[in-house]
Length: 529
Image 1 (tube, rainbow, N blue to C red):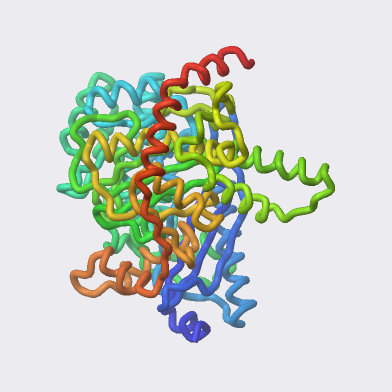
Image 2: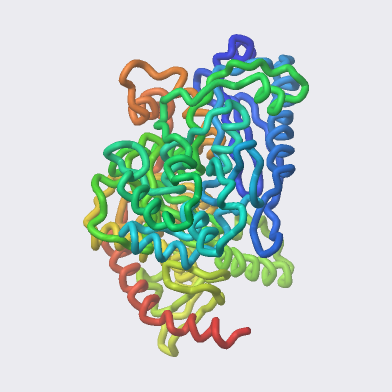
């Protein structure tokens, strides 16, 4: 069956460029992965700029596809020559500027760079719309403020996914979700805000560039639209062996946020998802615009153009993991050998026995800076008062609360100040591996039911493969939401935990102390050099 799907090209291929791994997933008619490939890579700090070289990008693309083709050959004894459709995804934001010959003008500046504060603040004030530092327009304007020499030569600006898609198809297009991390999207038109484009052009008019902003941004497409076909040149680029045929249709290239929403079935209004691991972010699909600008809330879109409120925090489980490692080290010193997963499970479940407000204990998990609470640097910190209830269960609960506290501050803006209502939050990532625990804590933080799928999807690469399949297989008028519910997740089982009033009130009490004592963290940053 799977071999026949490959031979008949009843498949979809998704390739996603993550921060540490490039992954390819091939799915069949059941939407299940039937082959995979990957390639490890790392960003590098060059001249104080986080970047990946063009050689890194192109080598990674070829090697990842090659690894997938080998997997197909080994499993099914088939040489991969054709697939039904292809989708490309990558990390959002950043800065990739090209001249008219298609040459990169300056090294790729990734989302990780925090070098555009001046530009981000000025554009936020101008547009009355939150422009985070990592957005492409902030990078472009900062380059203008810095009077960089490459600016007059710009012919095209895009993201990493948009660049790969362009190399494969020749089309300068971008999925609306990825485009929403370049420049604000007007959800009523499905493309960039025309009024803000005009404001920006007026702002830089005195520079007399031969281009205007609308000339250099990629065309915006929504999920389901055809975004071009694989050219002969593109096929050879992806598969230098020459086996892969040209003419394969591609869906709009998307960002990792959009593929994450797709992979967790969180693209409909009143749904959301939270990814909790080393960092944590939540995506909440909104019913309407927010009443005002909040620097804590990024506004992006789903792959279909629905407005999304995004809360992104730099710190989550790293400090928590460090404490678990300490307990493991203690156990080994005592001659106790235990599996790491068992240690996590034991300590996590112990946390559920703790007081709902953590008994007066306090923790900040800031290994790095945290923009939402205005910290450029962080210092992991644990504190208690003499009469706090200091025991293991409260200690572990405190660190679980701490890992989600900054996220809660952002979500409270949406839920308590803006009156946003959610039917469900889909949880994924390392925090949710121990059944029921991270989920229960997340439900308390958000005061929203939190679900975790029994059979989790394959992440972003699988998500973009699903979007490629949707473009090829959708019926007339079928929305992405209908397609996901009826054809992708119809048989998926999820476990849902509803927040208890006691836990939610306890987390509220904890966060009150957390925010009141932020000056302690500030002093730690200033004095612990």
